[in-house]
Length: 204
Image (cartoon, rainbow, N blue to C red; front, side, top):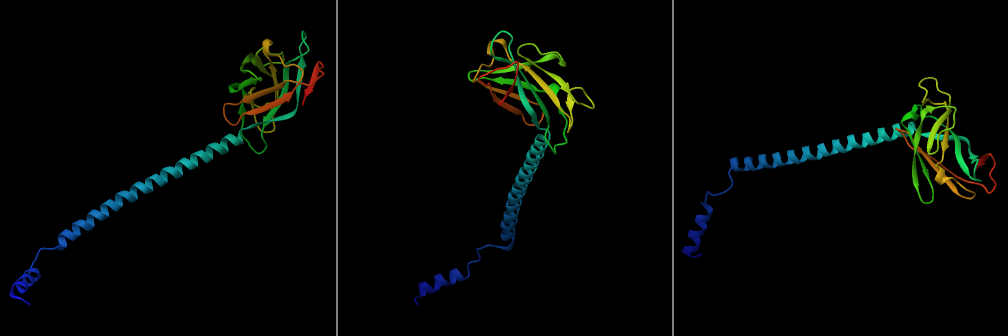
């Protein structure tokens, strides 16, 4: 080995420039802090997602528990002036196993034809044995142990719907009525007007 190479080798071996313990500790602490921040962010996102999922589940259970179902047949009443159905009568009750009361006074009713979606107004008073006015709906009969418009499980309410005078249902037409309670799922009935209409007709 030449003298010049030996001198360069000695300089390399004697060079004290390098990574000290303090610098290594600082780098390690920086890595720990970054890892902690990322861990906190990930855990926070996980807790938020879990809480959101719980809210969705609880809301779904509450809505399904307060849903309505149709009881018995749906009846159509013939118009006095035309051979068409002008009023409907059907009975609803909270779904089995729900245990949730349904307040019908906060409900909305919609009448759907092949060309129109018509919201129907509540009759005044809502609970009445008198037929509702055209374009309105009423509760003609209710088996309620508390509030006159709130039905519990095993209780029933009979709904009367008076179709708008300009949108009566004729033979062969499909009648679709949706009752939307303030909480829970909506109940929809779809029935076809038969070819022969009586004063009171069971709609299939």
